[in-house]
Image (cartoon, rainbow, N blue to C red; front, top):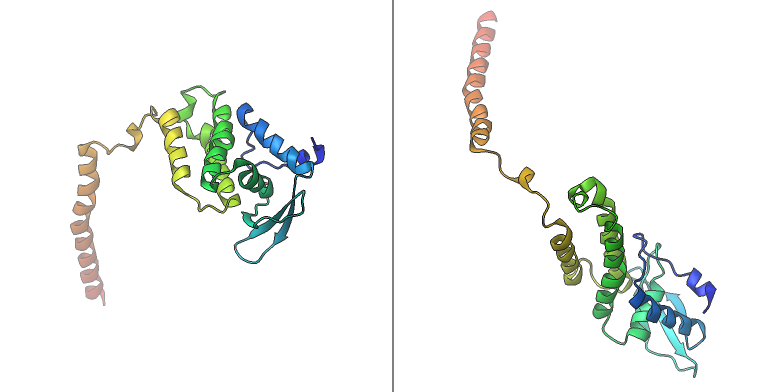
Length: 209
């Protein structure tokens, strides 16, 4: 396996780690690319910050070019190449694979060291939550799939039902009726008082002049 190719394999800003069941076929696919079965020549094109890759097999026959997004933080070509030449399915299905085995896998691994009581403390999970969001955005952008999308939305629904469903929400409930009444009635009572003060001040001013 080409160490140089693996060395170029950059991960998203969330630093995802591939699961055991997913890394084997992906690395195998990268090895095939490195061994010359398929070569990729990225060509920058005008438009939506994307690259167009012409894939050529060992017989020299060019395949239909496929568009791929461009990100500074990761090598989108590797993910697009896997989806287009090894996954043999729709890109939206390939995105579902990446979201599960890259983004969610990393998020779950980072959440494991925390106690379940810490899951409800935003200061301890906000970085992990942001990393997950960034990972889903990076993967979608690489495959030129609009973000957010139903797959991403379902991903966050799943993690909320798994990790944050039991978090207390009392702090977000409406205050007691007595507090609401006091907050509403106070400014109402102050309005006549302020009007009276303004009128009195105006009269005193006119008398002095």
